[in-house]
Length: 430
Image 1 (tube, rainbow, N blue to C red):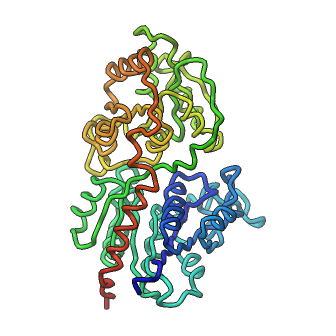
Image 2: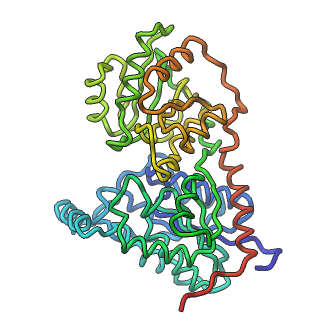
Image 3: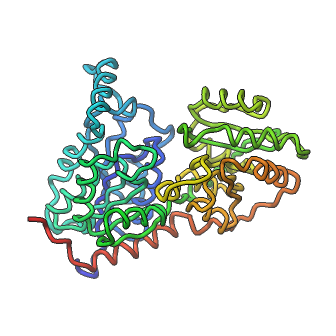
């Protein structure tokens, strides 16, 4: 690559706006911020018209034009297997989709696997020398295979971005089979570099597969542009906002609700309530009943991302859970969910439930954005809530979470990728 030419990135982003998947936030910010730094960015993703329940108010074609990003849309390959994420074709009845998903689960097939061919075909007109880096963000992990295949043909560097672990994922043990492990090892050997969201994730990959491939940590983050809305939510009491899904038995609502119920017995200056935004109404209601916290729960329904961010910006506390188990494996220690950074970006105080020495707990405690508690620390959690309620601290516009703003993270990613470009391509296996 001639030094005077802007570097060229081809991003394989299975989750991309207007998808509601949290992974779409990271993929969009990688594309947007690198384009603003000076990269020529193309994005291979599933066309917006195929998404079943898109985030309202987002015109991704227009947004990409404004940022100078070129979209390469693919069909929704394998839509029968994706459980409602994509619209079914007229000839594909819902019953057939259910049967296809059951068969795929029984056979331990990745439902995103058909997208490899679609992504490769979307890049068929590109020639060697027209792309410098092919970066794939996973899950889904078939995107890694597509990236390596495309990069090899284009004589470009393949970079694999781990938002979660693959065969080492502690919450999806069905990935951990010999076939997938062999495939992951082969793809890592073919990649020029890896990016991960936490240091524990890097340690896990290095321990499992060796230290041959350069690896760096680029955490999830927040986009300051998303918090420019002037509207606010008026909460009548001391609001703790939780937005998103729960994933029993690791990520459940009971410890948070128990702490809130207990906090209300300790003399807060006003009632402390959990405002829940999301789909898991049944789970939250059941947990509230079991913890005697029904009076301290307000269910807000499933709403837009924009409204959730306004609520987080308006609330004094945002709650985040990685796992409620007080101890965790190295793999679990590395969970650094994007939801954490939504709260950080809003400037609200973070109430994190995570193991004591996890990357998420270390980040929250060391950066001063809030406090972290293990899932069994109900009393300390309740007392912290009461302290925040009775002695509220004014928000600092230049809050200590600024290091996790995507413009700053993108500078680090830019530096790392330019370092990758300075190295020779990995040898092609015989």
